[in-house]
Amino acid sequence: MSSIRLADLAQQLDAELHGDGDIAISGIASMQSAKTGQITFLANSRYREQLAQCQASAVVLTEADLEWCNTAALVVKNPYLTYARMAQILDTTPQPAQNIAPSAVIDPSAKLGANVSVGANAVIESGVELGDNVIIGAGCFIGKRTRIGRGTRLWANVTIYHEIEIGQDCLIQSGTVIGADGFGYANDRGNWVKIPQLGAVIIGDRVEIGACTTIDRGALDNTLIGNGVIIDNQCQIAHNVVIGDNTAVAGGVIMAGSLRIGRYCMIGGASVINGHMEICDKVTVTGMGMVMRPITEPGVYSSGIPLQPNKTWRKTAALVMNIDDMSKRLKAIERKVGKDD
Image 1 (tube, helix red, strand yellow):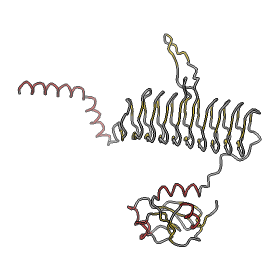
Image 2 (cartoon, rainbow, N blue to C red):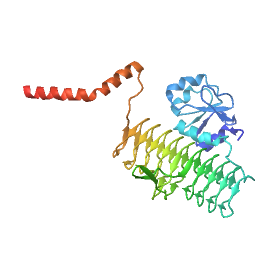
Image 3 (cartoon, rainbow, N blue to C red):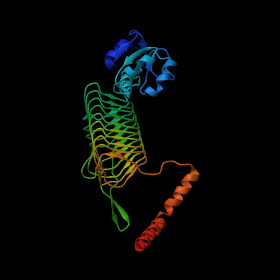
Image 4 (spheres, rainbow, N blue to C red):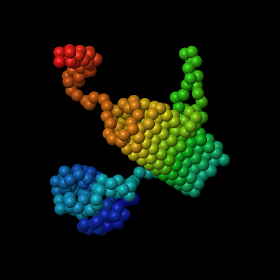
């Protein structure tokens, strides 16, 4: 899209228009960098004074901030949410592929829906089913008997192993691997004996998965990713993990096998979560959390020591190293005081 009338944009966003509806909007920018022809948004009233210097042609804001605006405006209840929807309307990101590339290798038994696109050097193996409007980027591999629902898009070099199910309207970024073997081995007197991973990965609708994330197939049962789940870059989801609907997982998270995470959870970046346990619905784990035990009550959970100046951290570390000795001395004092009483 090259440009859109502000009045048309307001209609699509269900926003209240103030000012000239014929202004042509060609893009979105921050309040600091926006120029003529662009639209911006004010999501926090603390920054309303910046509106005086803003050079955008229009601003998305709330009714409470309208009087500080000197340009055309779109008044909404939630500017940040409106920004997300506006960005979808004005998105200029190209599609991962268009049409069927001559160099794509597609098994004759594969079933392709209407308007499917497959990029250069992609491989579609036997028994694969692709729904309508599916887009497979260049260099992707789709293994035997995998099914991908309508409207799902894969960027370049995504690897989907055999017998995987991916729902509708999903987005998978480059380098992601779905369905590789889980880390399953038995030990025979010091030698590791591989356990074939016979389960699959089942992914729901409207799931987004970031670049270079890995989701392992189940050992016997399936690894399950619910509807509306969003997973950031470089996460490791081990075999038989279950993630509930609309849970968000930030970058670098590691989940051990057979973990169950509820719905509407938020897992902060670089967190490590133990396996064979459950986290209930509506739990937030802040960044770099180390979750070693089940969580049974909704809420916000944290672990680790926040960053400190090195000199302060060295003192903190020294105290932690001596905490066992300090505990013994405190108990001894308590016992002595108890006897004296």
